Image 1: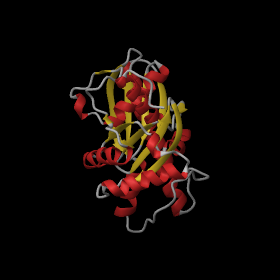
Image 2: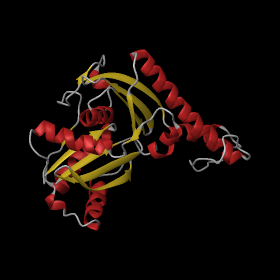
Image 3: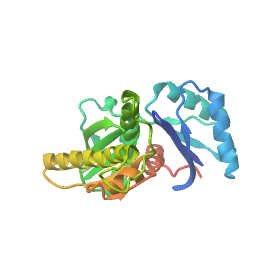
Length: 260
């Protein structure tokens, strides 16, 4: 089996594949202070509780935007799973041509998402990833990664609002019944959700106008199911795109089928 691990600023999403089939996946809180053993015990418990045998993991791949945790998980995989993980970088063979001025500045999650989406659809794409930051990545039908845009994530925007406005309390990020809120909670929900949907649509339209043609727009990330339905531009939600991309890159880099 293959362990695919995506380390983000807020959450760590990881799963196990048998061949190209995702058997199980989990979400952990990102804690840069957690130790190798703390994450190791958590991951081992998650595996055993879903009936997966840890000793069946024979390969691993890691995408990380938290440098301190890259080393932690590299050591954890070696200690608990007994293998050396592949670390995603801009230098690896992704099947894309990176047109970024400095490819090493591209977050590994953006590389993984772009590679997975292009492998899956082979067309002009815009990939919107709703994470701690919301990222927009443009890929041509020829497989060129052009770059994109980075905006504060919906969670960050909400937290900034609650922190800086003394009379505003935290609310659940859910769809309000109306755009015009008739109380403070629904007004905040409207501003956050519908306002953010407008941000997404505006950036996508500008990117398409700049490129001179429409693109197939897909969404991924933890908040995609909440925001994407409120947009006019997003055509498909791919909730497991990053994990699928990690499996694809492992297979492509090793030149063999994923561990089974």
